[in-house]
Amino acid sequence: MTTTQAKASAYTSIRRAVAEAPIIARRLWVVLLLNLGGTVVQVLIPVIVQQTLDRYVGGAGVVDVGGVATAVAVGMVIVVVGGVMTRFGLVRLVTQASMGMSDLRVLTFRHLFRRSVLHVQSERRGSLVSRVTSDVQTVQEFMEWGGVMFLVNGTQVVVALGVMAAYEWRLALIVTVGVVVYVANMLWSQRLLRRRYDAVRENVADSLAVMGEAINALPAIRAHGAETITMGRVEESLENRFWAQFKAAHLGNVLFATSELFAAAVTTAVIVVGLLMGPEQGITAGVLLAFLFLVNLLIAPIQTLVEILDFAQSAASGLRRIIATLDAPIEIPEAADPLDLPPGPLEVAFEAVGFRYIDGPEVLADVTLSVGAGSRVAVVGATGSGKTTFAKLLVRLLDPDRGVVRVGGIDVRDVSWKSLRSRVAFVPQEGFLFTGTIADNIRYGKPSATDEQVRFACEELGLDRWLRTTPEGIATPVGERGSSLSAGERQLVALARAWISDPDLLLLDEATSAVDPALDVALRAAMDRLIAGRTSVTVAHRLATAEAADTVLVFDAGRLVESGPHRDLVTAGGVYAALYADWETGTAVM
Image (cartoon, rainbow, N blue to C red; front, top):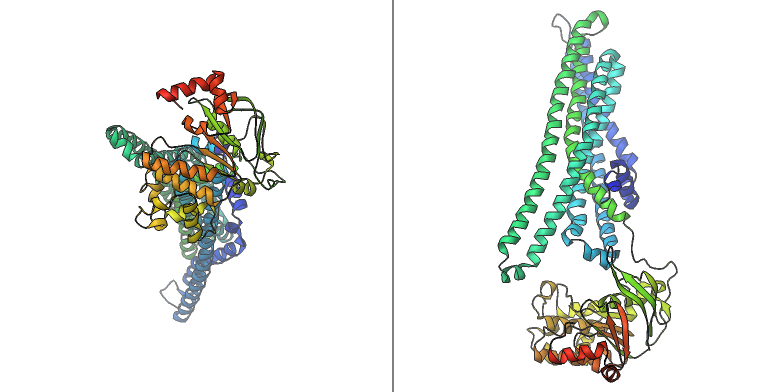
């Protein structure tokens, strides 16, 4: 979060939230009207008490029972009516707040989902998740309780002051001065409280990130005996979170304690001045008692408002983080008038393409090449040569800093997302699987595919023999992130997912180094069947793949240094020949 975003007022953040989720403020005037009616009813009770004392209770102890009974009956009716109005107003407010926060949670996640892969990879997962979990939850809890109390008590304070002024302006002036001084002090203290709750939200996000990382990395942690180091990091993050919350809560409690001093000071001042003025200046016992009731109606909500202030700062901090997320730019936007890719196999062209990661050196420089439709291309190079970045630019997971990437003769920045994702398939080095069955994961390539189509895809790729070894065939659960399958088996599912989408351009980040020999045969056979008849670009980690390609693209230090058939490049004795020699001896790092 930038400094400007951190300093954004709660009012500005609320306006943005209402703009994104308008249901929050829909027909808010109805809520305000119902709440105002309920508050006016509460303020009328002290007036009824005063009128009852001064009219129906005599100085000699004579009581007009009929008059008192009538006043009590009127008071009961008013209380019931006021309670019903307040109830309906609060139910409506809570319902709208809950629905609005649900919309805001979806919008925040959708925006995060549209951010670039580079941004998502640079952020800690727990920090991103906290935007749509703990941050939104904090705001929702405030709106369902604190927002309701703020509205109810704020209205009660304003109405009580108005009735006080009409009832006895001199005593009302004393109360008003006290309220102004106290509120000014609260507003000054709010800045410090806001900074402390900003720190709380940041520490909550950090602790979620650290714990999530520790849980995901548990096998590696145990394998390397890093339990002590990891627990140290978790304990440190939780301790930082505790102290941030403690400091914020401590300041909130101090502010709440000052409300008790304010209440005592205002009540004492009203009693002393009222007694000094006495009946000679119109301050009867009934008037003073009614005014003290009004003071109590004023003080109680102010004390609650101070308590809410503590909660409000936590919610405001969470809301600022949410708004900052929604305001973050989409690094790779869809074109205003997107185009569809032409039918048939797709050619690829890079024209003087350059790219650098944020605050890093250039990783691709002046890359110019062309891949004919239907050709089979292998991309090779040492680790860090730029081949993975090349692959991400091709499928538009990144956009070039300069130059143009064309697919089917069209700049990929002008291609619609729907057309690009349906016609171009990317199988990454580690096939990610979602919780569900093998069939569920294959269907991500074509959500409408039936079980029969899924089985047919597996048969076409030669995976039916492997499926027979699984407990339930395509209905076999894969576990979280595919944990029930081996690395090679996950890659087989990823290949079937790509096949069923029926792409015209296929990008494969070959991953067979961790696969056992028996499964490696099935994996390579599936790749061959998947590539057949399509334009394919394979980031090759084993030069056996390059041997079978029509063209080999050789990257070195971010530049395309060689291209051509395998046999010609070996004969040329350049970078590729050296890589091939190292690969044959088992010393190549790709």
